[in-house]
Image (cartoon, rainbow, N blue to C red):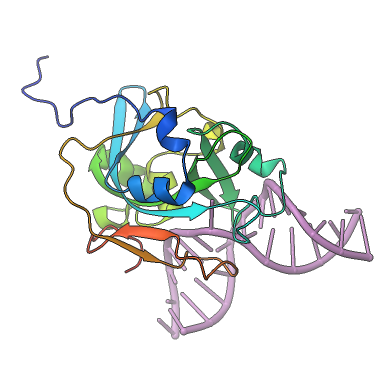
Amino acid sequence: MKRLYRASVPLNPLARSFYERDTVRVAKELLSKVLVRRIGSTVLEGIIVETEAYGGENDPASHAYRGPTRRNRVMYGPPGHAYVYFTYGMHYCLNVKTEPTGQPGAVLMRAAQPIRGIERMKKERRTERIKDLANGPAKLAQAFIVTKALNGHDLTLGRKLFIVETTNPEPLDIASTSRIGIRVGLEKTWRFFIKGNRFVSKQ
DNA sequence: CTAAAGATGTCCT
DNA sequence: GGACATCTTTAGA
């Protein structure tokens, strides 16, 4: 069956060089880019509207603060891979690894504006409210069907899970605050979101 | 081995 | 605004 048009132009996944940079910079630049999840013939897409940067031994809020462990090993691997961890006994959170290999750094995907595959997301999230599909890190992971099976997945391959540039980028108004849900490292304003976007977790 | 916290979400008051 | 679900990971004995 012929398609009259494409809802989104297929673009190449962001290259490893995009991720292999300063974590805070990557966290800001990921805003407005599109997170893509493919499961068989199903495609899920969302505009990244909120992120948080996590560092290494200089960042007490980071999983890598006390050095490498089994859980955080992806944070010490090559850039451009997914770091997925399980928390609170029931939730997954999705990060992308930044900085060069051997240097810890990751960006937490905190919220996305659903643009494709919304019906599937509603089913996964058990809600009809589009605003509530991915306005939080664990909600986002659930909507995009991200589990520990994707931990360490290479985001530059363009399969299963990856990120692409926006087709029509608009000028961004970016706000920054302290990161959410942490008890230390509050002095760093490493949470970034698109100001005014209604799919952000908290204004 | 044991214990406590956790980059959260949901439901209740 | 607060309780609570639920279990892996990590730190400490």
